[in-house]
Image (cartoon, rainbow, N blue to C red):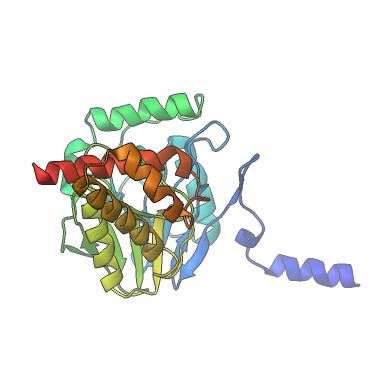
Length: 318
């Protein structure tokens, strides 16, 4: 009798509580509610590889009366199709808009899968990203993902955003309001953050990481990243969604990464003023960074971040 009751109880529960996208040796991934009408699929905190098939970001969906708004659908055609499969366990509404947070391909090359499923979808991004989306930068990401995933990204092609969103813009979809913050350059020269007003959720893109560190490319400005995070914190939102890592409160998501960047820049400026080289600054700063030493990629990226900050300070002094 108990078995029958349990079976009936299980049948009454939503399918998405049981089913999920399983990646062998990496984990299972499903859309999780983070606020009213807002879901995030928290991807692996690692670089793209054959095991994760290139999936490593945090695709998100927001439910409106007009349909779903998706933020950063993922890195490849295959990943995008799996993300959509999981999305449809949560809602049968169509995706009517996609917002890409920046030019790095792990966040937006799955646009192709969304456009394939919903041909009328409108794709938004920073004006600079629109200009760069068919440039060598995005093609380089296609090549990187094919090598890193050992072919899992094959078939992926560039479907660029076509509608610009600049700092201060407000996008209204199905009576929901999406306010755009763009302090560029920051993580890149194409970054936008999205404030979903109704749920009090801020999507930070790669202006914030949690549980991992990532690369600053040649267009980045660490001080700009600091300024972007301060603007996001000034919103006093209920939920902050990083580009990588778990969503949470300001104290859990935005503040720790801001603290990391501020300590980095302060130490590099002081070291530069005292005629220290970047490797000397790194050695002095390392004992103070224990709070982030366990984050994925710390050993790989910390020294690069010191060097990037050093070049930035040096350029300011010239």
